[in-house]
Length: 509
Image (cartoon, rainbow, N blue to C red; front, top):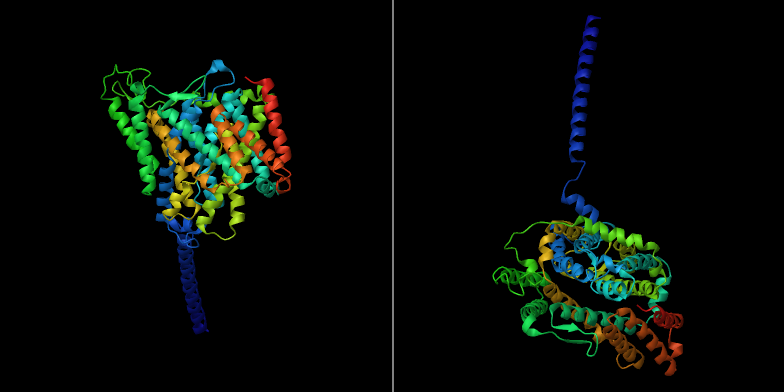
């Protein structure tokens, strides 16, 4: 009996030891599992952005994102330089605030690019685009409705752009406007941007009579003209040598020369003294890091206060602006997103392009809300793709760099317009490359495109050029008996453009 009890006690002791060992082992396993449960660092990123699936690495994505940012950083100085020419509808309040434009440009570039990278998982960077900024200032704001009317036009245009993108209307619009005609509109934008750039460089100035423009007094402007053209020449050199970030490097070189001249030439010089073209880069009397936050809020508040201004709602410019911004944003988006997406060689590219366009359109509403021109997919994103970027992580890297650039605003502000004007000319020349794709042998396109360019340049308004181009195309198709080849949508569109010119005649400012 005692033996049985002792045996039982021994068995219980052994069982207790065994259970204790198992408990310790189980606890150790749980700790081990908990230590390895979260996958930290690049593995998490690689899993979400599918690095392995798309054959890329964290290093390639970072380099690609930085490369794209360097190729696009010029927009932070060029966009404010153009949009600051947009007046308020109330002439006594002056033009848009420079810092406000800069900050809104950086914020929208960050936010929209971040969303593109996170949701669509593509290395495409979105920023306010060249063409849309000149449209904002010269074709909308300066035509009597101010930057407030331009902001509202951007909001409504992007709402319309979103509707077109997510509905079958997209296919109808694509089929309605012939490719050569839309390329003609793009060509006129390229010419116009280059035209504005040459004016900013100081090569010529506008006049009130004929000729419309004349050469500037080169004895007074030659330092600016030489530096501007030299910067442009450097950009072209880097372009043909295929140097990544050529625009940024050229602007940096041009700006460095400006700094040297501004701080070496005597202070009483006409170029360095108060009001001179180099004055902003002269810091011999000190340099301060100033940020005009009130100017940013002024841009936004002034824009929203004008929502009920009847002068905007009664202007035909406002409604044609909405239509034109919608069409240009749509066709630019289809072209840019299509080109970049096909470079990525993704499966189901059409579905991906639709997602990209939807992000482009919906996020573009933000631009109108906080006071900058509408965004678009940038062809400069291809520089990052060439460096190996394949996923949205590269876009997120680029987006964060726009935030990093905000504290550097005082440096961006010091870059004079004759240097940023070189970037305008360069971008204009690149855009004008579509000239070879237009069907010039067909009179309906040749006449329409030429009239578009002439009217845009002479009236200094892209809207007038596009409107006249559409009317010309429809008329030539009618007299050459090619009406059956023309989309039915062109008839109401042409009628709308005629109504625009008639209405403009009665409310012209």
